[in-house]
Amino acid sequence: MSDVDVALDRTELWLSLLRELTASYPGWAVWKNVDSAFAGTGDVDSFAPPADWPAIGRTFERWVRDHELGPLIICRHIPQGPHFMTLQEDSPYLVQLDVKIRGTYRGSTLIDATDLQRLSELDVLGFRRVRPGVEGIIKLLLNGTRKGGRPNPEGLRTKRVADLLADDPAGVALGVELAGVAAPALQRGVDAFLAGTWDLAAMRRVEARFALRSFAEPGVALSRLWFLKYRAPRCPVVSLIRDHERRVPDDRDRWLADVSRSHEVRSVG
Image (tube, rainbow, N blue to C red; front, side):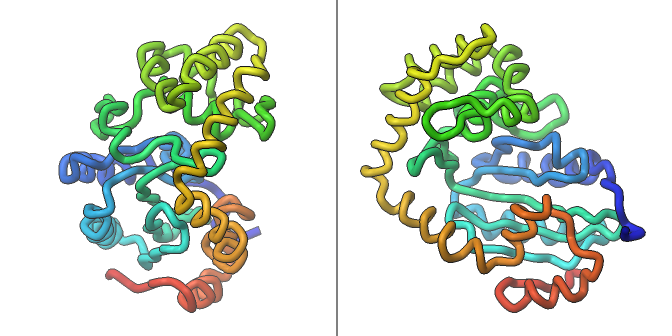
């Protein structure tokens, strides 16, 4: 086992960046999973319009330098937007900020940067984030629903979907509208889940709605397919995220040398 084998609490570290992004970029907001980032193992998932991505990258770079992190790593293989990353000396886990234009479900857009503006709020810690009820809807679909509309109990539990939905009914009412014509079905699915059951027919209707909508967004579906079939298997950063829970190998220099063959990697000190 490596000498560096524990996650460090990153709450204060991340807050300095998230507050700056909130103040500087009105179109930016966190859309899910910030708690795991604060705990030191997860990433910050955020949305912003593409016009802001270069400036957000420069803000991230300054933050890396100011906090004596490094090096800076940028992955542009994910089709929805760039991943800005760095390393923390005393932690084995990647420090990762994702900035995307959209999140997808069954091959079509579930939520995008424009949606997020009306569905977000200022967190008590001083950064902009999606409302809890909306985050619950997102995680109900992305983490809590298997193909065929079946429930994923582990995803529902680990992502605290019930708590997010129950804590913000007004946000849920806004979030179900992301399903468009299938909004009533999604509401039935939410109601059943909170009552301790599962409405399979309703969740299948929601799934079918997004799958059908993918035909109206062929670019979204094709870019996702290209990523999954070609880019992801060849990207050492994606492999680290997906297969190793963001845990950097003990031989960091060797891993960084591998990453640098296909990514921008540079010192910011």
